[in-house]
Amino acid sequence: MSDILPTDQKYFKKIYEAAHKMADFYGFMKIDTPIVENEEVFDKGTGASTDIVKKEMFAFKTKGGDALALRPEGTPGIARSFIENGMHSWPQPVKLWYFGPFFRYEHPQAGRYRQFWQFGFEVLGESGPVIDAQIIQIFYNILKELKLKDLSVEVNSIGDNQCRPYYKKLLTNYLKSRESSLCSECRRRIKENVLRFLDCKEEKCQPIKTEAPQILDHLCDECKAHFKTVLEFLDEIEVPYQLNPYLVRGLDYYTKTVFEITSLLEGETEKKKIELGGGGRYDKLLKTLGGRDTPACGGAVGVERVIMFMKRQGVEIDEPREVSVFLSQIGDMAKRKSLKLLDQFRKAKISVGESFGRDSLKAQMNRADKLGARFTLIIGQKEALDGTVIIRDMKNGKQAIVKLEKAVSEVKEMLKK
Ligand code: HAM
Image (cartoon, rainbow, N blue to C red; front, side, top):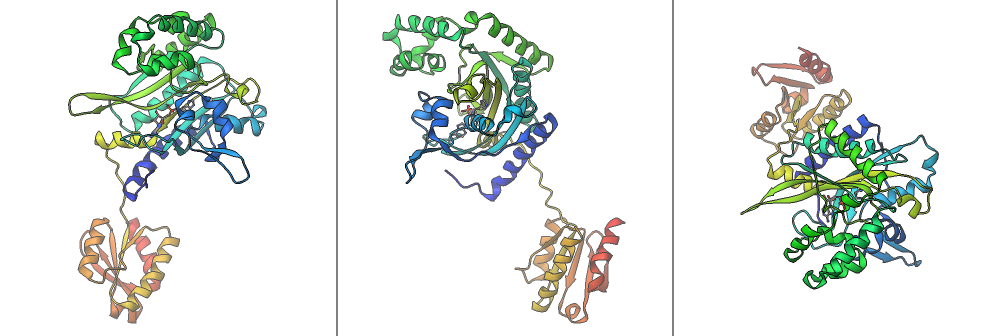
């Protein structure tokens, strides 16, 4: 878990604003769920056999004996909140977005932290494929607006309760016939979570994967038609995508469409694909958590990963650090007057820079230059005694002396010219 230092805050702000703007445009309402939930929400939601819950969740017992967990992801908490707050009676679909910290007990490495931030978008109460396409479009466009390069969208459908059990059986039988050639993890997966075999990265398993039956060939008519329409929408809105029959994602609740958005990390020898975000449809999650049958679809993006790419790909963030006025002072009495003047400028909504810690006029002028001040106000000992202030035009060096109480209105006029 790391500090977010002031140097990185501008990236967080930029990403937050990009997500916020998109959320407003598409009518998503902001939601904040607690960082701590009952452990059961993730056991049932994310899935007790997933790596996230089994290996990576910070779970603990309270003194009162409650089993709680730091949220490893956002979707089950949102589903819990939907049920608890009766959102099924709100106008449907309910479109929600969030931006906050999440926790996974992983081996820390570049792009993988124990506390990380995500922003996510979820649409609950709508089953149409247009939503799947729109969710993908929203994430893709946010990342494009943040000027990320080499973006790639991968999509797949993993079916539903009608067709998936048959496919899982087919895959299990196929893998059993090749069990001795599989990596140890995949041998375990045959019993526990056979679909995860499809995203195994072990060299050994790759040839077996190429020959494996593909889920897209075994979707039921409903899932097939749904997926076909999602792809047609993506074509229509010009989101470039690739079909990835091995994409299954590591969370249990998905049905039908799943997607991931990646970018390429320049390594010493080759470019490595890194996942920036992902998501999909989860039509059964709300029922699993005790709610009504509510189809839903969503996704989330990792903020630190986006920042890593923004930095590596040289995305500049211009920070308008400019001020209209710089206040400089010499001596204690002047400092006292400046403090009051500063507050008057704040009330007049005129941006002011100062450097009360510096006493030399030269150092203060340098600072004024750096901040791009249009005017510098100088209060020296004489001015402090007279109740006046020097206004220096930073463009042409011209100076005028005005009464202290007139300083704000005078500057306001001068800024208009
Ligand atoms: P996820 O793929 O587990 O999906 O996480 C989404 C993104 O969070 C990842 O693509 C990655 O960028 C980032 N991320 C995950 N773990 C870490 C980590 N340890 N350190 C840094 N970044 C990380 C979900 O969480 C689902 N809730 C997405 C979703 C929403 N599906 C439907 N709705």
